[in-house]
Every structure is written in structure tokens, then in C-alpha cells.
Length: 122
Image (cartoon, rainbow, N blue to C red; front, side):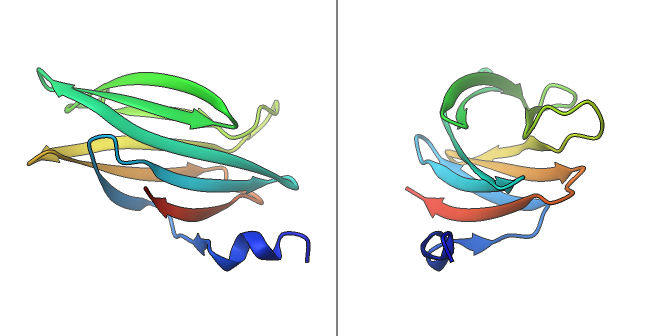
């Protein structure tokens, strides 16, 4: 009952989840794990010379990554929790860039007890 207001405006998503972002458009997720809610925000700011600069914030800690169009430099890993064995993590993959819109996919691995709520785009 305590988390009910949170779920009124959130939507559970199925993974892998594909989404597109325009420059400086923010996508938000809430990651629920082990009784805690961890916010995840992501946006991109620059695409030049086939390099995409992505800014993301997980659990209120900001980070920056540079992604290329081709594997293996087109993805990054977000550890949901740090446990010695089989900890869950997200894998964000940069798929394509067309007409000022970047396309991404999010995968979830070792998802025991992890739920992700899509909060939307800003």
C-alpha cells in the first residue's frame, strides 16, 4: 500500500525494451530491487564522428559514456546491485542514429526480483 501512488503513473515494461530519444530528451525508469527503488535517467547530448555522448544517472549518481555505432563499443552496463554472486544488471545498447534521433535497447540480466517501471520521457 505504501508504494501504490508510485505505480499509479508508472508502467511495467517487458525487456528487452526499445526506445528512441531526441537530443537532450530524458527517459526515466524506476528499478525496484530488494525492497528499494533506484531511479534511472538517461539522455544523449552530442553525436559527432559516429560517437554518441550519453549522460545517465542511476541511484542519484551521474555518469557519462561515449558510445560508437559498432560493437563492442556500442553498449554499457549498469549494475543494479553489488552482490558476490549473480547480481542483476542492465545492459543498454546504442542501436542506430537517424535524423537526430538515437535508438536504444535495454536488457536485464539475472533479474531475480527486479522490476522496472517506465516513468516516461521529458
